[in-house]
Image (cartoon, rainbow, N blue to C red; front, side, top):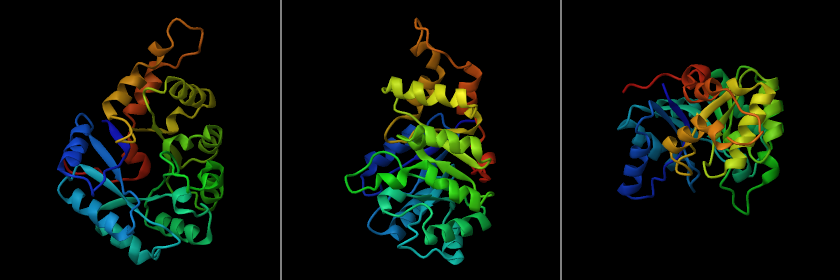
Length: 261
């Protein structure tokens, strides 16, 4: 089974964009779709919920801004009733510290309802985003306070890779989304080789970051990882470790229900 844990779709776009998204899912068994920030959070989640109704093989993560939205249990239950199986937060884009008191209340509710939280503090960034709030080490307090909460660090916490690796090695329920840009060969190499050296390859979840990259291209790059450095003396990673990332049962790890095909 191949699960893409990180994709987006813009609902303000035309039918061609929707068709492109559907096409990108070919060969992928299950795709997690993250709600994207808009002026109105409710509209963003409503649009995603409507999209999911027609495509039961997808899983949605609803957007919540803890400083601007209602974070009570009723609101979280309402999101789940809309078809969302998890939450996504944008700390640096939303200009809030990951352990802000209201954010901590949100995580508490998510833990009680078994809703995993995806921390999308990665590219693309705007000039107004607060990069300080994207640091994975700021999630340590969250993981310590709510040890049963399933947490996903988006895009390996780039550009703070070392912080992410430390976090993965420290907390049982913290995972990282390995979304790569296949053309950035040295960046891809460093992400994977450092994860292997830290012994946290089993905490990496396959993601494409679509539309930043196509899932098929990402899979090709991962499977061909050792070929990228053939003819050099650089260390390699066992192929079975790379394949395990692609075929990892992300649904079971995050406690998500398998969608109906």
